[in-house]
Length: 319
Image 1 (tube, one colour):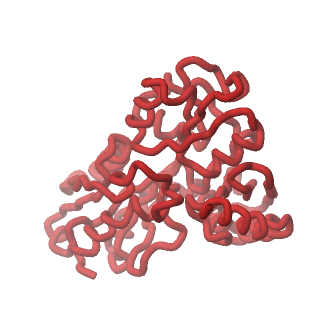
Image 2: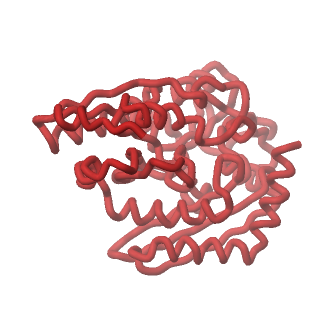
Image 3: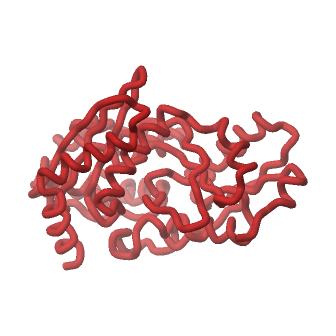
């Protein structure tokens, strides 16, 4: 792997980012944080289009999953065109390719799902047959389980594209991550935030991650100041649960942890896409035992036949 040693000797960093408005906001946020920490450094952003941005006519679960949003950014780092990449953590595969590592997890924004509609106040106010848009099998399963009278259809594209599809009347409502709407200054589009008891968030939802080549210890040291310990602990446990079941956008799986005063409470869910079968479990303990707590929760879900549910899930997806 090529190392950008020349960039560091010149006190210059290049951030690889998708070119969507939200992705660029995230990259600019990290750039500004780095400039504040290292004012004598030059920090630039390399905007890129990924396959995940290009393929909009099919569900992610059908075309390769979350890795479609990060591959091109990793290639840019491997070729020395960028030093680091900024991602929404929920878009990052559980297993990174060889040669890469997560260097920092930034403090989490609102992790909840957001109900967005121009005409209705919440899911429970939608009439039978109303069309709800979501890109997530997790959200699809949870909505189908509670509101079987609603019609759930795929919703792809960046955040602005999804809002335009709602505004054009293609959907009665759509479900988005609250974090993205808040980061882009659009909190007024949120009609209601769905509590975790209603819609358990995806692993890493609301958190931002910085990825680097794993042969860059000097860069790791520079980025350490951006790492938020409590968020790091929470998402480590969440991603451990997801990894235990081969977590990707191809299975309806949720894992959400909260940390307070050194203690962690984590909940998890595995379901079939139609919401007909759901396993739920929870665990709690010391936050510095995040990996163990994630493993404990995964075992509790397995005891409720999570593997059997996932077998049904995979069969439904491939139909």
